[in-house]
Image (cartoon, rainbow, N blue to C red; front, side, top):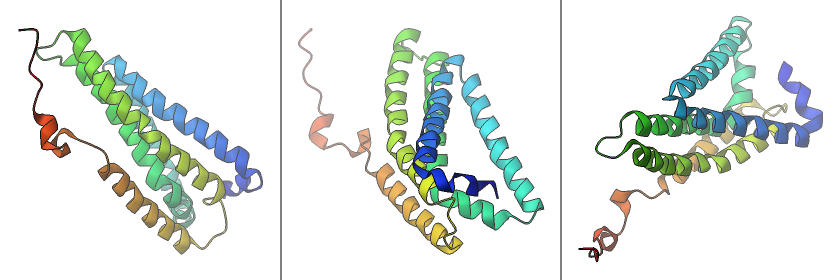
Length: 182
């Protein structure tokens, strides 16, 4: 399988994978400025790519090899790219549907929220690229790779739940300071 070609150059492979994943994620995010068309395109192309590869591997009886390769790092990498896509669509939403705000202000607010989202994907992509370079292409028992995937998936859920949201802020922060401009 093609995945064995990176075994001898793990550090180089890991850094190249990180560079690629960051490029894909940031491009998917930034293309939100195209009213979401570029973001949707990137998501579709990447979805089709994994779909075609998985279909070809299934056809050739290589599904276990593929998914044992993808599982350990894909549990972090794929959600990171989905989050970047959501961030890009957040920019598109701010651009297309400003509500009562001026379009520029709506875009600025959407951009600020979206940047926080996409920056949150960086730790996921760092870990995913390390796993993809050092663990995924090895001859480890597939069961171990799937167990690692489960452990990383659990950590991902904990990471995502650790974020703050307006509903989870302390009650005292919900009280607005008096407006001194009145």
